[in-house]
Length: 460
Image 1: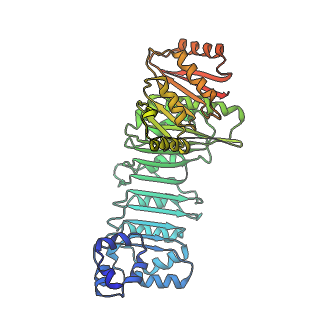
Image 2: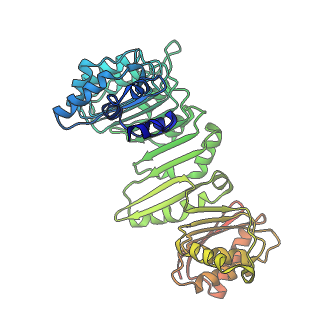
Image 3: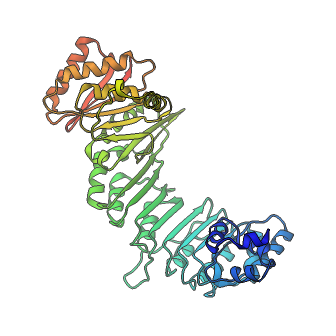
């Protein structure tokens, strides 16, 4: 059996070992023969070390193998359970000999131990990723951040802290201070805009930012938030904000559009979670006006969409990039079903049954049947936007679509958006009068934003 394993190429072992803990690799292969001894000590093999134990025996056994591994071959350290982290670090040096160590993950490390470790990490020439999770109240995040910002190669930082002592105010970086090259910054602890602005003054190269905002003492108005946004790095490509205060100005996404255009020209992903406790009378603000703001060329061209989750006593709004439940089409060419094979027809029926598309945007409609086909193909669709030419018979189009929806059993569609170059208030009024005259809808709202007319259907 060993001889057959030895016939494997080194590349196969590299791929296999990439999924295994370094101590387990050393325990299983170090005493087989000279061939494996050489392989395990090759500079091309890098070890991922994970210390996650519930007993002294397991810890000591793995630690013996850990000491036998060449420190130049350690790629990552994953240290959990504070008792064993302290034991490990008391006899294992974090220093420049770990010249291939690129990633450290720490779970529930004691505050003093964390400070000692971070001071030693300054000497790691290739450390690019640091992930810290702690529930200790004595963690001083101000001191922690100032140490981390001195790391020479760090580009990814995530800090999760549920409880920590109120730190001294982090000072803004000055012109003569060393700045960090961190690009991915994930702050999974409560932070005020003022505190975040200080953190970002040390990280001018951040392009992926996630943070959880809450001001424990003061309520931040939207004007202050705009000033804060203007100070964020213009290099941002991903922005993730969780906001829990009851300030409806944050739902004015025409303002958001201008802020993004002015401050973040390179932004590719925008995530915004707004979840204040609310009352029934505010549902229209979320489920009506808010959604309408997002179905415009600015949001659609960037493939960003809004999702509203209504739960008992709370309504949450999630702004995020298009996912697998969204579809954007420039135009479609309908299949001639009589020319399709049985297998192709079965595939279409299967797609209809199992697809989860809820948001569809057709940029250019050629025929009315294009839209009827989409309604049949995507029975779960909730948001439907159609791009029309200016010579369309708008009343006939509206009648055709609404009759189609009305005749479907359990239709989920509740927002129809019609984009047409000649849209104005007069056209919107004509559509409304026509709907009322024909009795096509009885519980609906209609409004216009630029060249798009929105028809929101409450029920049929």
